[in-house]
Length: 77
Image 1 (cartoon, one colour):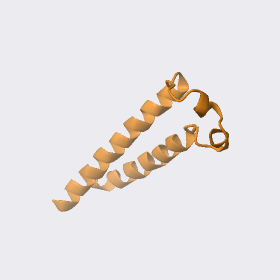
Image 2: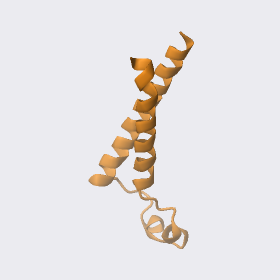
Image 3: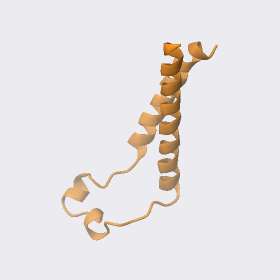
Image 4: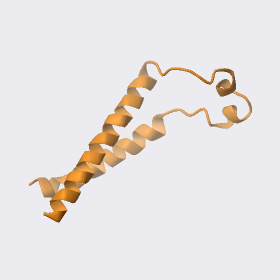
């Protein structure tokens, strides 16, 4: 049962991971190029929804890695 459902789990996790990465804001945009907020405050902490999204991205990436390793292990046996 697991070998049949594992590819679908990987597809779902990959879509979630891409979405989580794209939702994160970056200071490397046009404002950062011309001395935006990144130049005035190079050290800042993530707070609120930004921090939750960052943690969720890490969790999804780890789950995707585990699913990929499990899929590879099942394919070899």
